[in-house]
Length: 155
Image (cartoon, rainbow, N blue to C red):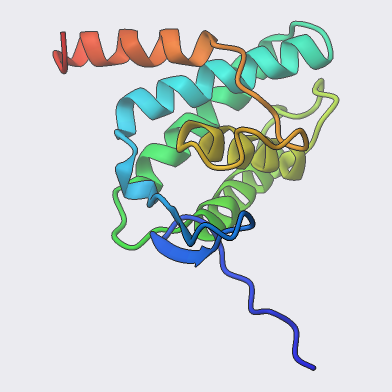
């Protein structure tokens, strides 16, 4: 008996739905507008870490790195969530090695990359009803809307 093949969520594809109603389709990361999603991610990462632990300046910097990494990664064609997760881990590990960004944080690069993955999947509407994922607090949507207004996109 063979094990089912696993795929990283991020490339749009059909998978069998657990409800038996037909295949479920997961949206591509290409559906994310880079600047507003980066603002969403920066705000949500900072807010989550502040609420989970204590408010610290390093959480602002960690969120900034996550948002900047997302913008750079979304510029690459064919990016899936697995590749994004690995990119976040690489960048955060590099920052941990060459700066004090994680010195005062109570989390590490892997924790933050997984948090980003949960938040982005939630933003795409994947796993929003799963109790195992981190749910956005809402501050990210406010930051995303402000980023869109600043860029002159939308109303």
